Length: 495
Ligand code: FRU
View 1 (cartoon, helix red, strand yellow):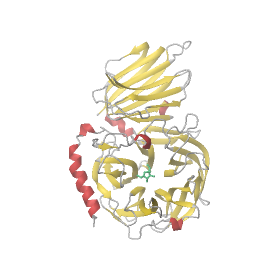
View 2: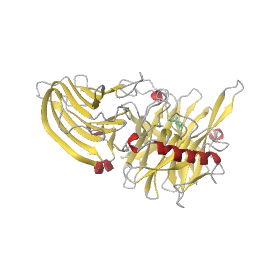
View 3: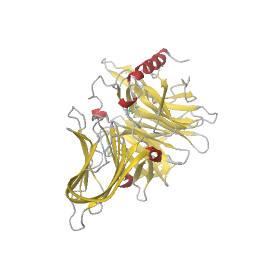
């Protein structure tokens, strides 16, 4: 039985999506079916397909009472929408069905674990939010909320742990068939922490430990944790709110933190060895990962950021898209490496290649243009004695429009700039980061879709992601150097 609220949401999205043409959407990134999208939820491989759910407010292009939208794909690039699966329609989640995750049970059903939100009036007339963890069971199309919900509440928390910031369970099944999950939380003074819970059956849960504590280092409340073994280590991803920048890391206010370390399973303790930002651009938050059937760890994130996400006009037909899925791994030194999923290679066509092009000043190359492209660049100084001072590539270029990535070897700083990318607002448009290079030699892979750019630096050592709004006819690409540089370029259109 589906509720009236869910039925209405299904009717609404079906009707409104017809007003959005395929050309008005990203070509190979998932966007919201209608209205608003934030975090990826329940990212899973289930019954032979990838499923991606998402935080969803169908009724307008702004955040509102959260539902779970749903899309499926066989290659993580072409998505098919399915009807919204959950609405805020129960006494324990009537103010929001917040983020969560998915696991397949031995009987073949899919179990979703999510956060239910309930507003509680305070004596002074204001409201506080109570957040609990809940379960829904389904078959990849329809899901039923568990009658025993909520399965984790403030009663399960040690004293002094916030019941108002207690959300975003990431569940997995252990080798012995039991279940575990990590949940974002904070102390009364909003210092973030990640909690570990266990369950014999996915329905009855108990608190095990504080897996990691922030100790006031990375922002305040920690949202959307993910925790998994990879390349001999354990990785904790979380999205802290309200971060101070540290040098060239964590410039996003709300951004994503990657902690690499070891895990003592018995004690439920994670020991950190290394920390870094996950993305160095503007629009990246709340990623989730899955272990694909072929063993790859694939991560997908919300390709927006909270601080700029309420500046768009109300007439927008949709707002919110996901990043390209990225294969992630750890390098010897613990660095998180990211590369676009290899499924993208199958969509590359119309190769245009240039090698060892020496130039000074500006350069345009026949055939190097386009707006749905995958382009690899390798840049080095024109001569060993004379390093260049600045290199820039401009794309989505036409008339007053362009988006730029520039690099200054003397400072080792790479910058992304989307000031001239269709925005009429004075929101943040630039971000800079420190990158590695050998005497000015760097490599960039730039993936451009209708409304976004993702720049993979030096084989995925760093990634800079940004959304853009530039008119679609802006297909120009040009290069600039202060000094002399030598360039290899290969560009593919994405089919
Ligand atoms: C992160 C987040 C989550 C929450 C969801 C609500 O972007 O704030 O913590 O579950 O969004 O939409």
